Length: 92
Ligand SMILES: Cc1cc2nc3c(=O)[nH]c(=O)nc-3n(C[C@H](O)[C@H](O)[C@H](O)COP(=O)(O)OP(=O)(O)OC[C@H]3O[C@@H](n4cnc5c(N)ncnc54)[C@H](O)[C@@H]3O)c2cc1C
Image 1 (cartoon, rainbow, N blue to C red):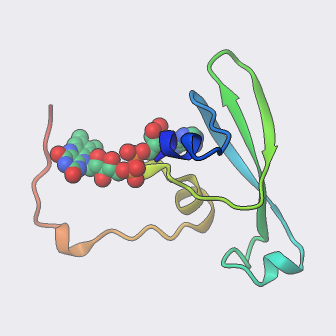
Image 2: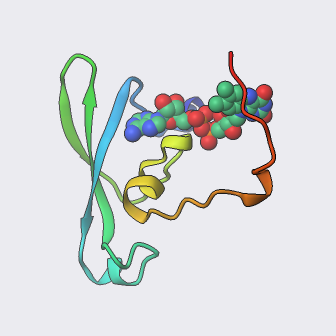
Image 3: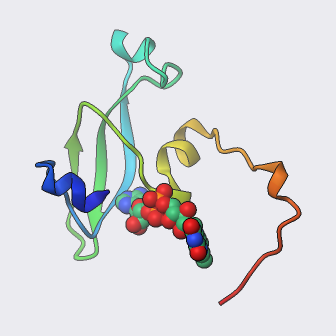
């Protein structure tokens, strides 16, 4: 998905970690699914070479997998699927 986004003319940044998201408490935010915290408008990022910065955006798609910063850190809406409770753990 990441590479495809790049091929489809999105600007993509590899090796960059999003550390936090900033929200704007404006009218658009009050009507969005983020109403309780405002509209997500920018993200702080960092790289291994200690570079860091902030990027503004209009839309956010969190494809962060299990780490998923939007659901885990902000919306806190992760639910454990109880139907999978009888499945064994594994190791490599
Ligand atoms: C050990 C293991 C074995 C598995 N085996 C199978 C299997 O055999 N078959 C199968 O179908 N599924 C398997 N899965 C499940 C499968 O890997 C996941 O369902 C799938 O990878 C989820 O895809 P995703 O794109 O949502 O997230 P991911 O593939 O996890 O991608 C998330 C990406 O976001 C990046 N990211 C996360 N947080 C940030 C952040 N703050 N800033 C920037 N980037 C961030 C991560 O580095 C990663 O590159 C396995 C999972 C595990 C853990």
